[in-house]
Amino acid sequence: MKILYFDCKMGASGDMILGALYELAPNGDKIIEKLNSFFEDVNVTVSDREKLGTWGKHIKVEIGGVEEESIDSDGHDHDHDHSHSHATRMHIYDNIESLPIDDGVKVHALDIFNSVLRAESVVHKTSVSKVHLHELGNLDAIIDIVGACMMIEDIGPDKIICSHLNVGSGFVRCAHGIVPVPAPATTILLEGMKVYSSDIRGELTTPTGAAILGHFCEEYIPMPPMNIKKSGIGVGNKDFELPNVLRAFVGEAEEDNSVSELIATLDDITSEQLSFATEILMQNGALDAYITPITMKKGRSAFMLTCLVKKGREKEFASLIFKYTTTIGIRYREYSRFTLSRKIITKDTKFGPLRYKLSEGYGVKREKAEFDDLKKISVETGLSIDEIKSQIEE
Image 1: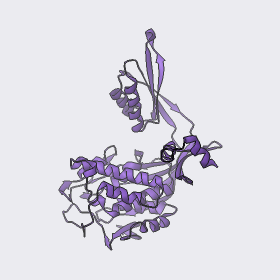
Image 2 (image 1 turned 90 degrees about the horizontal axis):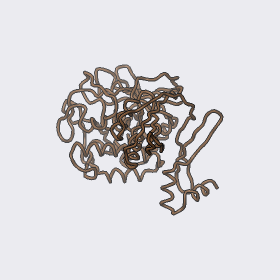
Image 3 (image 1 turned 90 degrees about the vertical axis):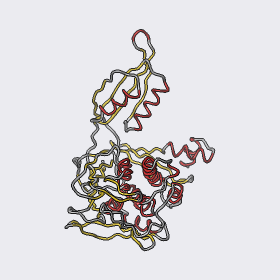
């Protein structure tokens, strides 16, 4: 299993993530070249840079000849020009939708910006459609986010893992005043991630960095046992008492196939409630969740809810089951399993780019078109799923 691991002892920013991924991506130079073709006023360059003896790649994004920089916690505004720094949701969406990139990359990039927009809407107590992004609304953020999505697709990891994130400390000046680190929107984006604060004064984890890693990373743990194949270092702009770098590693690891099965039997819940509960479980990362009709004592019709989760997440999912169902007791047991390795690939078809799930191992290789993509094509063309499949296979 190919692992992509982010080591974030000095937090994470968009340019640091992009710099580390550039060193790992097989086609990093081609991706930088493509990023440079997106917008007329944008110039993306890669250079070697050193921080306290540690060398890595720095990605510079210049807009109209000026590099965008963040605002330090010392209260000094280092942005050179804010005339282009406001962007609405539709402006960002239109920019990304117009880019000549794979649909899968667009989906990831739009999801990341959606998370940013939701966080900003909560902070400013307004609707998502009315949010005007400042630092994150610039073209440099689009380059960081879309570039990271392209690099990760090029690397093709089976699993993405991150260390605990260092958020820094102190205060940072933003467009709306002076706020504590992590800034309010960043704090919302960090929900569900494992973070800590250090004595280093400054904003180490930025909204862009939190949004990218929060979207892609499945776990926040120390580096797991793996055979490292390649490493990359992304260098940030700011100077601290420690090297301001983010490291990323690609390695091979044996997949941990230990799973736990949680079971609850229910005779006092509606079908609609139970269906909603399974949706919640899947949205929170259950490997599978399904319902089986059963007959309980005294001939009562009932349901058995079964939820498969990764080992170590039993209590988390037990809490969800107790919250969203009427059960008062849950049984669980542990299993090992055999699995095929899985990854998503994109193919060009007569209907445009189509994602496929590729599964292989134990002498077996299978691929299956993503149903959501087939459904989208069906809605657009009026063809049935079977008709689309037959035309693709011609």
